[in-house]
Length: 241
Image (cartoon, rainbow, N blue to C red; front, side):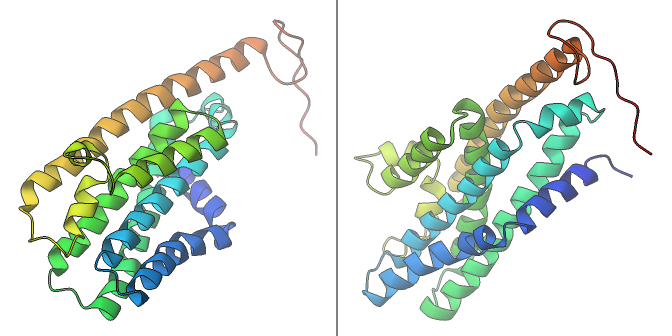
C-alpha cells in the first residue's frame, strides 16, 4: 500500500469534518460571480474566477498551518515527509479541481460563454497555482492573520496592477483566460506562465516545509519521549491494556 494514502486520508477526513468551510469554497466565488452578473458587469466571470482562486489558496494555507504540530510527530513516528506532502497535495488539488469544475458548470449555465476551453483551462490552472501559493505563504509566514492578509493582497492587486506588472503576478493566467472583454489569448504562454509559477512556488514551499518538519522532529527525538526532562530522555509509559 502506498504510504501517502494514509496522510491523504487523514487530510481528507480533516477537511470533511469542516463541511461549512468546504461549502464556502464554492459559495463565496459563486456569490461574487452572481452578484457581478446581476449588476451587468462584463468582468463577472473574471471576478468570480479570482475569488475561486483565493478560496483554493486559503484552503491550502489553513490546511498547512493546521498541521504544523501534527507533521513533525508523523515524521517522528516513521512517515517520510514526501509521503505527507504527496498525500496533502493530492487532497488539496482534488478539492481545488472539484471546486473549479463546479464553478465552471455554474458559469456555463448562467453566462453561456463562447470560449469554454479558455474558461476551464483558466480555472484548472488557477486552482493549481492557488494551492501552491497558499502552501508557500503558509510556510514562509507561519501566522494565520499575516498569511491571510498576504494572500488577500495577492488576489486584490491582481486585477488592478498598473501597467504590465499584472503579467508577472500568480493569478495572471487565471484572469487572462477568463477575461471575456478581450480577444482569446494564445494558450501556450499562459499555460507555461501558470506551470512555471506552480513549480516555483512548490519548490519553495516544499523545501522550507521539509526542512522545518525534519528539524522539529529531530529536536523532539533528542528530548526523548514525552515525560522526559529537557535534554534528557524520558521514560516511556507502558501502553494501557
